[in-house]
Amino acid sequence: MFRVTRRYGFAASHRLDTPQLSAGENRRLYGKCNNPFGHGHNYVVEVSARGPIDPRTGRAVDVEALDDLVRRQVIEPFDHRNLNEDVNSFQGLPPTSENLLVEICRRLKRNWSSAFPGEWPRLEKVRIAETARNIFEMESHEIG
Amino acid sequence: MLITRRVEFSASHVCRSPELSAEENARIYGPAANPHGHGHNYVVEVTVEGSPDPVTGMVLDLKELKEILDRDVAGPYDHRFLNYEVPPFDRVVPTTENVARDIWQRLEARVSSGGRRLRAVRVHETPDLYVDYFGEQPCSA
Image 1 (cartoon, each protein chain N blue to C red):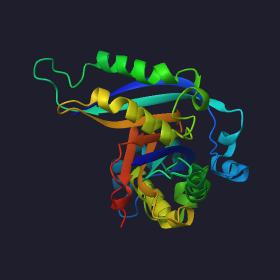
Image 2 (cartoon, each protein chain N blue to C red):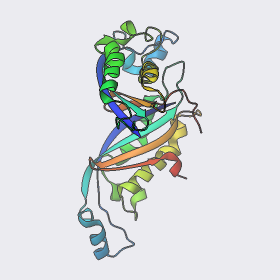
Image 3 (cartoon, each protein chain N blue to C red):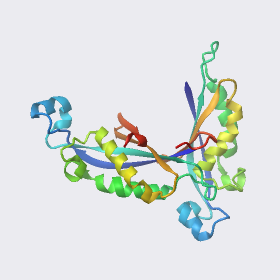
Image 4 (cartoon, each protein chain N blue to C red):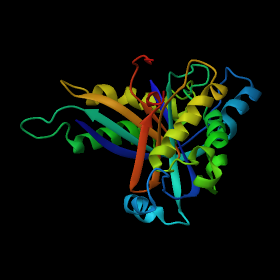
């Protein structure tokens, strides 16, 4: 069994604020991440797919197909964007890295079969580093 | 518990399969199929699973693991053209997957003994692409 992991990056701004809390509570909860004009990060995303090797090509994952899927579903919509303003899913939902991770995983899972129509490879997990010190990871099966 | 040791080597390769047409090779492998080859600084992480020996406190002496990796990975691979100089890549396409599997096969018997076993071989072809190989177990759903 092989797991192939590819690393990508995008730069985006966000502000953590939830309409479910008061202004004071948002400030207390999110601290400087709640500053009204937002701030940005260089996000690093790692996407892992697993599967058996294709004896014809010697590869388990067509990396070009993976790159194309991630570019269309993640990089193009998120890179050099304001996540709160430019991404529909974050209207009313705070773009924490947890929520961002779920959104990325959901997008990849939803569109996986357009890039990989066969039984293999399957999306295994997604990892996102908001900064070099804050890293979030989930397995594909955690998305219903 | 798991212990991991890293080893590096620099090598050239070309990804072309004689069973595929020139067009298929170019489409599947992209620039990696360019006929005269190209190179990478490969980084390999070898992970061994076991319990610490009650006397030495070690799963596997890392000095010994270093010697194994130097002899069995860096030795044959470093500063070589994989397709021409490192069997089985005279007949197997040296994709990252196949390199990971070959390293696994070179190491498994050397590091596995008693309750200790080779758990994973990770091969970074570039900082943005790596492959983990866990042995020949079937892919479960």
